Length: 399
Image (cartoon, rainbow, N blue to C red; front, top):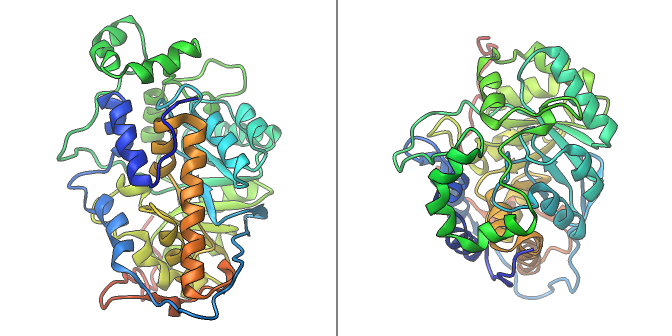
């Protein structure tokens, strides 16, 4: 556990994470792509939306509980799957415990640094995330491992074309932490002794392998080894996705939608839920913020599937804006990673508490006694804010 103490906002968690983490690790968290247009828009778009509050007759109690993919959760915020959490020695297990302690579900990346069995043990409400990579047989094995471990749902992530080149420079990340790499990164690590001490105490090194893309007990590949396999796998067709969906007999979320026509195709493929996402701005740059694409997608398919949203959520009021415009819940990524970096498991709990408090305040001001009562009338949408993509598209997208 860290000893960074309580923080007031996600922005403060980010400041502490920047102070605590080696420069390369912090830059890897910041990520983004190319000019950073999508990365900035994800958060700034929320700030452009206003509220229409009431002043009397406000509810004394506000209910935040909801369900996502069949799981009862205490607030409409779910942990988004993120790969290799070398920001803290306990990684995804600390995050899973924090989510369980705050009554919500955990998305676990197939590129995570901790095995799915350990994470499900820490939080039974775990959704396992996969990329379309490798052979169909290897995907079936990974799904079977997640099913056997007790994962409650599957997340298929599609919004990752990984545009190369960042105007502010990309971090240097080694293939594995061998002696040569440790010597090279020693100055960075020694400049952040508290981060290093966490790993020393746990008698471990930052793990750059990904154990969940092989059968249990097998030697896991490095992150870059798995990434190379993903890059070498031809992208899936809609028929491929329908096949993947048929292999999983529980709830199934397709992550990465931004267009109405793609949302309709996802419904046809039989998904339980979709998440509007541009991979936190790590994808094709200049893709609009998901909150801008939400109203059109919600109108088109909101009555057929659960709609989630991820990208740019930094406060409880952002969550309320997303719910008012048609989302069932949001997924958070960087927000909880900054909490994890700042103060371990308590830091992630702290971030979830900040979001809960912000949701509660917004519900109170809007005169809503439940997250289920929110409507677009609660939000002030400036002219030209929305981006209804793929609305008039009648032709199927080229394969």
